[in-house]
Length: 491
Image 1 (cartoon, rainbow, N blue to C red):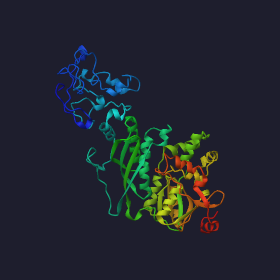
Image 2 (cartoon, one colour):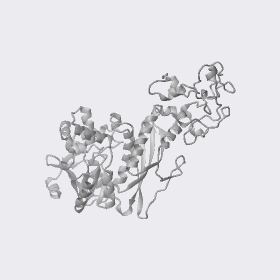
Image 3 (cartoon, rainbow, N blue to C red):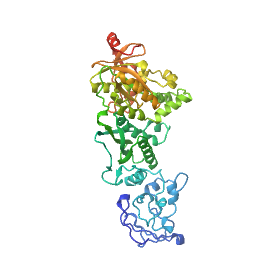
Image 4 (cartoon, rainbow, N blue to C red):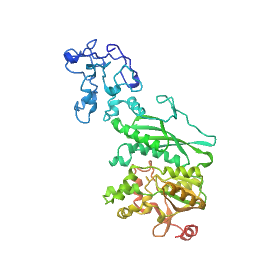
């Protein structure tokens, strides 16, 4: 009944036991509170008698929005156009009060307004205006865990029905990501941010030989972030999870001065088909998937305004927007058991080679002339004045580095062709203590460990300043005769 006191759940951020308006403003322009006072807030005590038009609580506009002196209606401001009329002047069951404080769709009584009335899709509102519980309700409303999540969302923990065979083990990885560079450059919407965060976490699962099953997403958000941005991020995250055969089953939202996304991916792998960093043996070949350097070349081209052909622009924009791992090839390599060791190269090729060799207790020789660059970017490489080794050191390529026995190279090549992927042999595993690269001029030099380090690099500036100097990547000369003797691939 419109006169009764309703006790809406605190879960939606509603003041408990608020008196409700049974207004008659269509006839008199006055609001008819039972006690002639607005009880929407304890600091508002003026009677409604004599007031023309709705009060600020009834029209659903927060005081902060009024203080900002935004127009009550206008293009792109759906919430406030709806809020111009007081809900209590209609024949609905009760006054909508503040639209952003309405209870979630999942918990609202059937006696309330229709969902479209009090859950107006006004996504330019900020998280400061809406509150955490409202945002969480909006996020989880569109998630579909595909039967894996028992008992739904809203509990202290998620219960996941994750089937696992006796020979399978769980594979778990957590990664933190920030704002996708493509979004900051205006090349794509917030969906690319969510896609990037999930792809980042899933990449390590796949290169380790696992199949991702479930994902959790924690969003660290500034208070002035808009709901539209948050929902866009989650759309991208949901689409990415589905693309990799996984479901989002939980997460968290917290206020933070700077945006960040922390994703945990959980999958399964065959116990005897695990791909570790520590399995490489002297005599193995080093193989990379795909092409390297397209992302950093795109950044350089846009920053320096280097002319791009249509094909080159398509390649660099795809590399910037779709920072995704070679999922299909990774899912083929792992279960096949052909890789001795593997790692992703998202932080740069030299760092990945060092990480794999350090874990395996071996060394490596690589040839800069064998590093795979996209053929459409040859003119961009020349204009940028960077070598393939420098370009591949920048990271952001989201490709894989594998160590394989020479007898397995042909099998890997067939797998790649069958799914439309490319692989390139770039070097060989040798005895411990030797890490060298043959540069374009044919000299063997020490391969320095240059990689993106979030603690050592300030906003990435330190890392990118290093790769701008070839000496930072390729160090001092090493024993030329010894390296040439160990090198198994010829000239």
